[in-house]
Length: 92
Image (tube, rainbow, N blue to C red; front, side, top):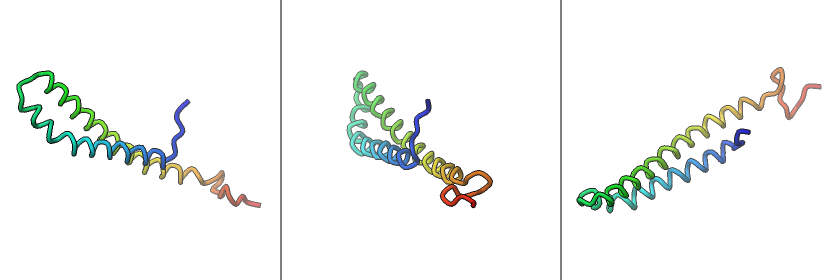
């Protein structure tokens, strides 16, 4: 059974993931340059993992924000009833 998320829930999830990506970018940029300049391989791997997680959060957040716009458009289109009638005001 597919998950049933509203466009608002998709949008909020996208904003939260994008904010996490931005926060990781602000926090990790300084120490990632120090790690990548060092010659220690385990630190470089840890820095690369942090960089990948940051990019995944940012990208997925932006994709979900875009998907929420599409979901809102599809939800608005689905509100028209059979034969073009408004479901809130059925024809007599």
